[in-house]
Image (cartoon, rainbow, N blue to C red; front, top):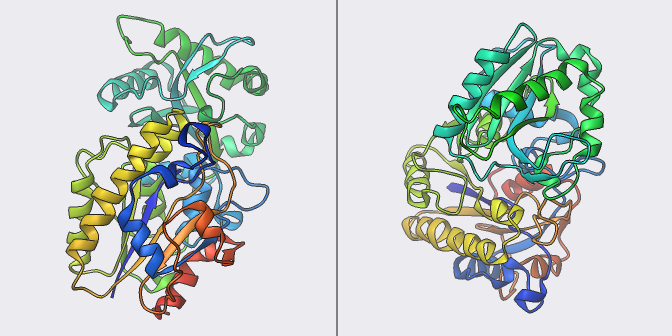
Length: 398
């Protein structure tokens, strides 16, 4: 049996007046997910444990079957795992965004968490220059993808910096940065680094992008996860455009498949992801396919774009996989990691809808896959990291 775990990041949301009281899931054209839901089982899963921030790091860790309350150390360490960085046990790893602020001052505003979705070929030279000019025995900059980079603070876990709370920049779009600057100011070294980076990025001979500040956040000690195959009995892979998902894969000894042209945006290489999944399944039994687009559209506050992203997920990921595997015994898990409501432009902790389709699934009989329909089944997993185990038991895999 082949098992496909399909994730539309941030797909869930709340009803919108502009969509006549529907959510973006309900407004999207999703005949494939609707049929899988109607002929399979639906329910809700609480992927974000109480007291934890509703980030993709926490939620996707839970979806892969690892309890975030036990294993999560921060967003930065997960992405560091994707890059294979050599880290000491007391190093502090920060996720580092290139952002656009109105000004780096107490009355400043976070204008854009992604610097206009800066391209990797533009951001990489900037981060390399930051390392050349500002890297030292304490701080090291590592370029990543688009606006997502890393800052390693040697032995930083032994300092008070490990306890600083800095808002994820996508949580404060068009909001004041005063609270965060006050937090940064409690670390003199980090404060100096922030302003030195601002001055470097202000050099228009070096930087013509919208990025005018760095934003370290999501710090923690290096990540360690159990072996996925040993835990679940599945020989699996992750496919995603983002280092967060790749890091979870590397840390749990899964295969990590890179797809050229996978951007994490609405224009990603859907066909490449499908082809990569099918190729892997020729000799293996499990693949976790992650699509970032709906989340990015949610952060952008565009209901139209998010509806389109969900529709494309159905038409260009779910549909071709179903067609290719129609004569193969296949089980399906389809869900999102968290909600990214248009009104909020950031993540929330709502329980997420999921569908299971395969052996052992009694038909739910719902007329479509949506937040509302998933809530009608009465099936709710209060510990989201148990969703995978629940699905495997349902399918008779373990």
